[in-house]
Length: 262
Image: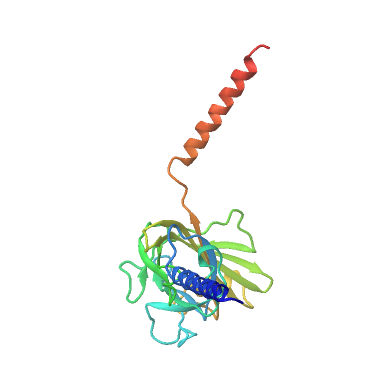
């Protein structure tokens, strides 16, 4: 190996090291543009109760320090990410943690609960938060609606109660609710549609028993809950209209061509 070859290889290694360093720095920067993808979360427990059925309902997510929700209520509950995520959330892993707001439809809201009425548009910033992920993305998970649950064909195995859809699976009951909103990328202000589907599992019980408990001050308690967080792109304004116009134009051209004589 001559001196010029050694110099070339040394310089090449230097360039490679610089490129790797630049790549590492770039990857540490938060993502730009609308965030899309999905990830799962799971918490230690959740309690749904009412102090006045149909008027003042509460959803309380437990904390890691109080997994049975037996102590005084806090503003938020805890969760772990059941990673990895997909899309913009691919960097999330099972080591990531966060919080979710405890909510109520009581008017006025009772401290420390956040006001989230059923079927009423709202703007609640950071309904969920993630800890230590600013190097991946910097986002506001904003809640905009807690819709009424829908049961197309109510039966003994499926009933709807306010925002909850209750499903009897053998001897267990799964209770599902959706929180709809907007995911705001705080790095550049871009937005995506947000859907947080929360499920609580109640074992060795019936739909009727869960409904009765949820409408009482004692509440219906599940010792674990999970959720799927999904962000999807917001269609560009006018996209549908442009597709219709394009389709109509093609149809017109086809008819003109079809009407020509050879």
